[in-house]
Image 1 (spheres, rainbow, N blue to C red):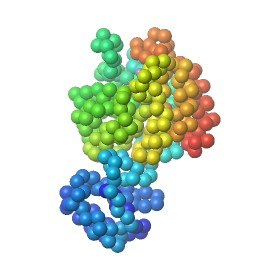
Image 2: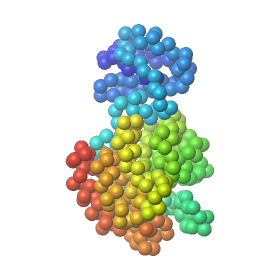
Image 3: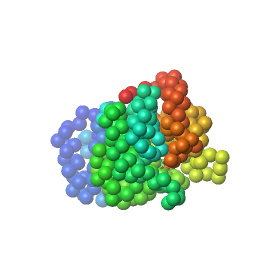
Image 4: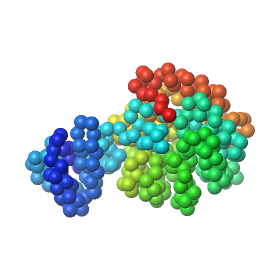
Length: 338
Ligand code: PEP
Ligand code: MN
């Protein structure tokens, strides 16, 4: 349920309303937007008398929310959420590019790629330390050492870092990581979502391999209901019957999500296609569809990458994509900020 509060309402009356709602065993979420203040009610609202609330002086409207996701619902929070990662802002009219290798392989590799992508316009460095691989015999990532190397690259370049968490047991290692990534395979690992939500750190939640938009938003709801407001969604392609590409990029999810939720949406064209030559057209398509950013796999030597070489582009190709993006951004009323 949401209660829309009249403009310039009496603060005391508003506080009384919040107190009364809480006394009914219902949690509240206040969103002060540019046009109105919305009091969101989370929990079992069956005992709340809608007519009584509607009759209050300060109340403009009361609506029940039909969707099962509440906190992440655009109706709860009409304005875009801006996720601020040490000054790098996701959401609204900001556009950000996250780039880096699929996995951290060595200090030389990660620092080199970090410097190259930063020069070309990336604002956040990616790199997998814990890798979710289909085969237990494939490279599993440098794990704790991988995070140390990412922190080294961060110290050298000043870029915030994002890396994937796969287990609650590793949470302490992520203390200095700027954005915690929840990978596609863990989108419905609900215990992990709850634990990560309690850290109150920015989180990027990738869409599951074969999950609906509603399931994805419910997973974001798990994180937000633990108190974390800073969630970035990442569309990375879904499984379909098409074998030519690794996944199928669901471009329609981008404008759809902008209606359904206030959270920023980033697109990963690398995992979506699995093919380096498709990364550029898909990146530009994502910009056109209104994405708030991109996450692109860039490797110094894709032929010898320990993971996902076929979808990794070289720094010079990355630079060309950023140049094209910059031409498009004014058309979608966004700007690249670092
Ligand atoms: C990744 O970004 O490193 C990754 C493993 O992606 P996904 O979870 O989307 O497969
Ligand atoms: Mn990868």
